Amino acid sequence: MDVSARSGHADYEWFVTLNRACLELLGIWPETNDRNERRRWMTNARVIILLTLIICTCTNPTFHSLIRTWGDITSMIDNLQYSLPLTISMLKFVLMWRNKNVLMLILKMVKEDWMRLKTEKERAIMIKCAQISRLIMIWGCFLMVLSFTLVVIFPTFGVSLRYLTNITDPGRLMPLQTYYMYNVNNSPLYEMTFVLQSISLIIAAATYTGTDTFMSFLIFHVCGQLENLKARILNLEFNRFADSLSSNVREHIRLIRSIKLIDDTFTLMLLGLLIYFGMLFALYGFLFVTIMTQGRNLSIARLIYILTSFINTFTHMCLYCVVGEFLVIQCNGIYDAVCQYKWYNLESRQTRNLLTMMIQAKKPLYLTAGKLFPMTMATFCGLLKTSGGYISVLLAHRN
Image (cartoon, rainbow, N blue to C red; front, side, top):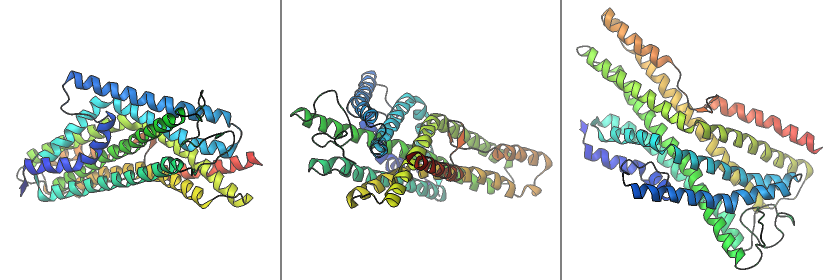
């Protein structure tokens, strides 16, 4: 039984609502119907204003503070757990903004896939993949709200979970470890700076989470289409083999192009995230080992905060590799489907045509970090091993 286009439109809206709401506020949602020049200009102006706000109120002051605390490893770790995510968020912001036209084409393809007629089984597979994507979005929003509460809400009541010193925080509490060229302890400069920092953190967190979930949103959709394609290949009709195979080959080529477009869009971002996670994992490992071996005091509240930050970073990095691994499995499934087809019942000419698709499906398709490293669980485990080795280097340097 075919599912109507009206049902497909409702499913598509259900699929994109959460992610679109997050990215539209930032001006980086790839609009598929934005032909209004004035609206486009206003969106670009919003992006520039938000980027400038993050740079001036958070990024530059945190790196300025990092220079001042250079040599104090604990203060540096406290700084880098903010300054590195802020830098990555800005990178994501710029890449999403710069690649809006490319992402618009991919999003248009996604909408067409949901709108076209399909069987109940194909729709169920697409819904299953969409639910995974939505759960990732909800989990990301939960971590974002929790982190915002720990970083911003607690300091408003005079409670900070950061590592505080006379150098990093000589006066009134701020959400981030920052250093400004003016005295932020005086009112109303303190209140204005606190509010601007809080707004910048909301923007950075929404960008960080929204971009990750948008990428997973696209990949899981492609994986659903690959799974449907696999089912269609296994059920190719012998009496209209040529037409069915031609249709499936076109669909396979379309999905391969989509994967390459997604990889080209996010590959630089994934490379930055790979480096960022490796650094933070080594620094957090060094911090935990130092606490256990030297018996340094650490409050329960600060320990909870550090663990929350680590889990957030770990979850996001693991997400990239799990999504990449899932994509590889689905791509390999196409090759397996072609191999499992009852090709021995075909004529020799038809078998040769099937062989062409088999050769195409055998080529590995990956999400990559900088076109250098495939985003798979093997890469993730290798990264953990390498970062763990750097922990010993830091400990040796401390001694």
